[in-house]
Amino acid sequence: MFTAILLACSLNGQCVGIAGPAVPSMDACMRNIPEGWLMVEEHYPHLIVKDAKCVQWNEGA
Image (cartoon, rainbow, N blue to C red):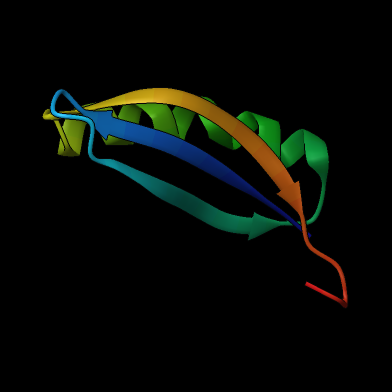
C-alpha cells in the first residue's frame, strides 16, 4: 500500500503533513498527488504546499 503525503506550510513557518488515502500501487499514489495539492490550495488558502511524495507501507510500518 502507498500513501501520498504533502508538506504544507503557512507564511509564518508552521508546517503540517497531510496524507491521502492508501492505494495499492505507486502509480495510483503518484496520480493522487496533484489532486491532494489542489485540495490543499482550495481548502487551506493560508498554506503553501512545499513538497509531496509517496510512502510505501509494509508490515513493519
